Image (cartoon, one colour):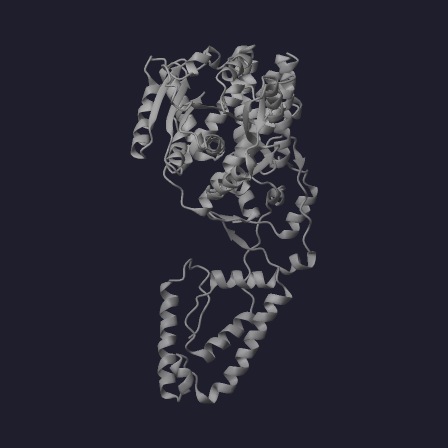
Length: 623
């Protein structure tokens, strides 16, 4: 069976005259072969070869293999390319059941080059430089991008000259004939694409003539360099950090004209980044803009604001282990302090939805000898609609305690600030029987004491109130950061490092969780809402001042000094709490990057090498 070139006038492989001629030849060849004796083994495989032609066919197959191998090795840039293009456009391939004729036809075609095409007209001068241009915003796909005005901004991107294409080997170019290129939707040919865009917008399916390679090389050598804007994400990230810090410095110096110019660049630079860097830069950019334009965030004063804050807190609890770690370590310290006590009382300075206490109630229910009588006092802010949200939390906890058979009492205290509390509010109600065992008190504060630093003297008053009720233990969980010192620039720099790590942990934890298990329903929502939760803190740290700046985080060392001066001494949390906290993180999906460390009797949870929150326990110092 033979394959034949199509006539130059036929555009497809289905020309009527050619196909009729091929069929006639096939029929005639089949009739002749039936009369000859064919090799039975090759006939069983579908090839018709006369026994007398076996030696000749074997020799021709060896020649064909050598010819095709030499064509691919000797001239990979010219001969092989022309051969493959020739076979792809001008040849019809059939099943070579007539092995002898097919091999002979292949040898003749390899020895005969494809018919030459008429010479092509010269392409525009800068067609050869189109391969160095990586896209444009004009009408053509390879239109040259406009140069960027670098004088308008310190952080503007600068144009970089593109490299000039080196001329190809003259000997290889002279051996090749000009080829006709057909452009299509997926074509990647630089010469055809540039001719299409520079020639007035030719249609994508039109035939375009390309200049010979020698002409393209000379045009490339004479053409001026084309400016190409190269965006390096790492360089853009450095510029982004510099813009944030420069804007913060301008704000500190009250140079609001420069700060306004810088803050306008931050969204553009942040858009070039990905993942946590882009998100945290967007929140800091928004906070700086609020500071520059004096548009301070309003406090949560409506019912919708309060409900939204509770919702964000719940999502933050679900998406990452920080609040779980805080609750677990504080509960462990309280549980150890309540060992052997029959009447216990916990005062929670921020009860919120009461998520911390079911685990403690369950641990007390499993205690040898039975659970103690448990009383809980929950402190919370007043609701805008004057509803008793604290009472609703108490009802839910009471139902849970009833199911596990724990004697439970609850009281909610509404206070606009913890400084409004008095010692008598934390004491047991009514008169106690002299025969009753005295009540053991524990005070718990998770991310609450730092808010008192915005009010002069408020922290000292609260610590004095707690000291008056003589608790057996006081558990304190705070952010391990220093956002309440020095100048605005120092505070901004420290918060930028801290929240960048927090956002990294959210990204890393969510990606690890997705690898370990299929995404749960609402998992993406938890991360987004957690980012909003942290974004509100960023806005308060950066954009607010005075009493409005309630996020005043301090380090464990600073809290140690404050509590020591107030008459408290530290309680060592112990290795048992450390081991159990590590076990908790091991069960948390995506916990590979989180680290628990013991530091001077306290426990910290961080992301890799950066501690982010710290749990400490205290008691009233002996007189």
